[in-house]
Image 1 (tube, one colour):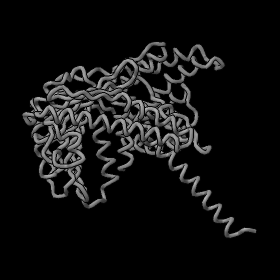
Image 2 (cartoon, one colour):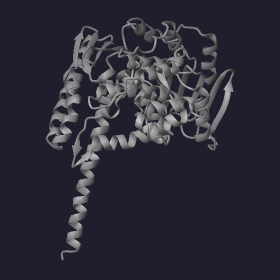
Image 3 (cartoon, one colour):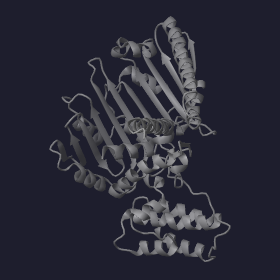
Image 4 (cartoon, helix red, strand yellow):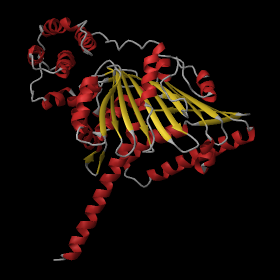
Length: 465
């Protein structure tokens, strides 16, 4: 369950927040194969829509498939398209417009737009007040806070297309990654159906007592009952798992290793709590109280609130603010980067080139230390670029292309000291998150080949004749 959940979070929040519904990452053919439906055309999908035993996810995928079938026919010059298919598709889809069932109205409108040759529209933006409401849920002793808007797509995402088709020693990295990702994705879809994130709000606590905790607030759309049932099926026999309610809030708590809790106030809100120390009491009751009060005023420290106030949160797609604690200043490796600052903030905005433009500001009280830190970080980046370029010479030609985005990102980093303030920026490809897993796959293929060569040599040595 854990690896599957992690994979789904990567899909929903990956690409710098430029993602779609969970179902949008699910290939149509793979879904219907899982459902033992091999023929996917307008007629069979019409039968699914009329089937009383069809699941809510079946309905969504059938609506989507009907629109896709028209797109496929129009895109293929050799296809024998039936002129009546468009009219038939519109007749099937129109009754679903205005449906109150989760996601159905959006999926119907999207497929209708495809059939008509129009550009589908995304989900409506969230009301401005919910940004403050979610921020106000974070712990008052937070060290780092931030939010990320999810730019929900208007159509299925070609999951395989996000992975460069690179072959190492004859093995496709794309095929290997898909063979591991797709089963988990299909399992998640089968268990909880569709899910969508519109806004992610996070708070991280690292105080001077070295207590570490984390809170994640996800606002979007999901099936609260379905998720609860899935969790009960997966964890019901775990003696350390508890299922209970606090008012109208469904709670799942696990304390076998590190305290973890999931709060489900509604089908639009999901909250995750974590603490590193097993003896830590998670703030479940205080979060429930804040939800009931619906007070949009954050209870952050003065320094952190000051940093948040300086951020143009309407413009930023992703933003974060941090206060530098004493423990950060005392830890040697952390001190070299953050020790000169009392607080810092960063914003990221999607550019027209598809890349994230990240800007940050660090503020302190000692101008000389700020300058020293800017020089130190610049030197670290140059060392990193040199190391990556050196690694390029030691790996197969096919893997070198994977290092390109990492080097480009580091080369775009700039740091400038101006008195008691340091500013900086860089450009990041949202898909860079795929780079490291692909490099790991490539390294594994290389290691497997080398071991095979060693074993073959040993066999020859043991059996020379």
